[in-house]
Length: 154
Image (cartoon, rainbow, N blue to C red; front, side, top):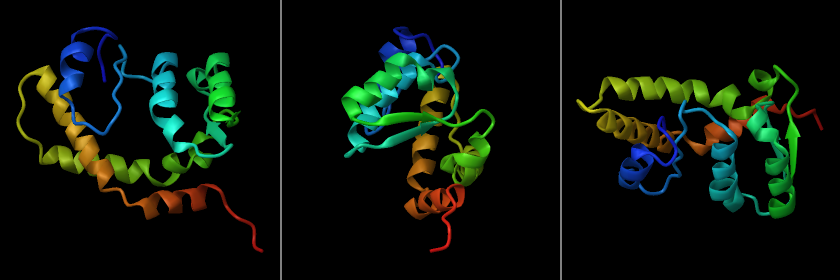
């Protein structure tokens, strides 16, 4: 969410957001080291059940020594960085999910509830994103992995 870490958005708005999701505030609403650390500790930690390769793009936040050390020591896994400019060809969510997700977000936006304040707009966006994500079938995610990681014939 766009806002200053520790500022009013984080202190007063985030507690009102729907439960069941993890939220982070960043001044440009981008992924940075702090937001990536929140993702690793508050989400990925609970998804990895066995040693895993965590494939990331070459965003600097994804491959910091601290992030790689956390994945290795705490998650018993390994970070592997995709080659530069390979994201669109290799990352399953980019390949098969984000296009339909963004299209559904735009459609949902057309059916939006009128809001007036910036806080209401942020909350409405969060609610739309959660609604749309809940509507993405798991088979779509599986198929995007199949498409992004072609299997040789057996």
